[in-house]
Structures are given as structure tokens and as C-alpha cells.
Length: 104
Image 1 (cartoon, rainbow, N blue to C red):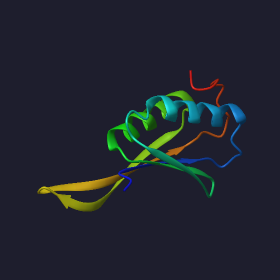
Image 2: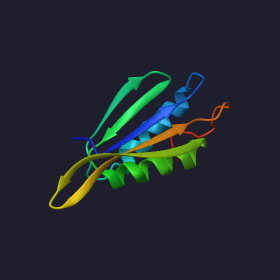
Image 3: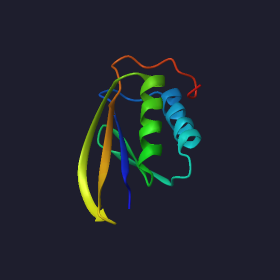
């Protein structure tokens, strides 16, 4: 079950440096979470098992590459009397490519 999803979207083709930066950031800030990367329309999706790791990774990607971050929630289930939600972080990258080199 994936509790956090990061959707990277762009109206242009991503540069090799941007893709490398995103992959490095995901690998570095994933914590103990497992993740899966799938290509999607207009970008790609990163599915995280840990919500806080997904939140931290999304904020770091936004800080390095720029763009707009939008967060949406969806009710999943109740565990031990607590509501569990799936958070989706959509990052829309800017029109101009980032000059970031490998996420650092």
C-alpha cells in the first residue's frame, strides 16, 4: 500500500540533469520507505510507502528544481481508530529548465 505519491509534471521535455537530480533526491531522502517510479502522461509518478518520507522528498524536489507544489488528500482506511489518508504531491515544473546538477 502506498501512502504517498509524488507526481512530477512538466509541459516540456525534462533534461537529463533534472531527471538525474530527481532520482538522486529520491534515493537520498527516501528514509526507510520503499518507492516505485512509473512513467505517466506529462511526467512520472513516484509511489512511497511512507507518508513523511514522501512529504520530505517532495519539498526537496521543489526546492532544488522550482515549480509549484499542490497537495491533495484521499481517505484510505481506518486503523486502530485513526483515519489513514493518502497524500498526493503534484509538482509542476517551470517552463525554463533548472540549472541544478544532480540534486546538490
